[in-house]
Image (tube, rainbow, N blue to C red):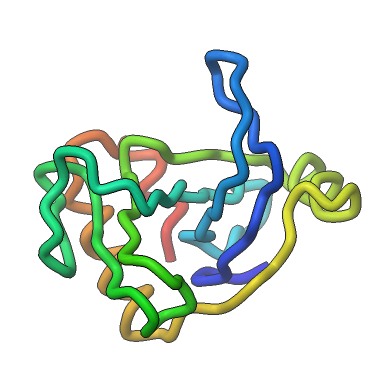
Length: 131
């Protein structure tokens, strides 16, 4: 698994006990025992700007529809980072809970990672996982 891969997770479980089909994007290529760091996506605009690109102060990034895999304009939610250790990640993959769907191009994923690094909610430790 490498940085920029897009995964589909059927019935992704949230901390409140609810589940929903979600797309996740891998933000790093883990080394040693570092966890996999995923960002959740949504096509629901809600109160977010539709302007493409980095919105680090508001903790999201907007991807253009029909250009980078996603059918709809997509918001990457930096306030919804998911850390997963290697064993859980591999187990999810083999159980069909984490299905690879696409890989984002290098310029896009570099821009997303740089935006994420500027987000106020990311920890120093999480920044160290990004490569």
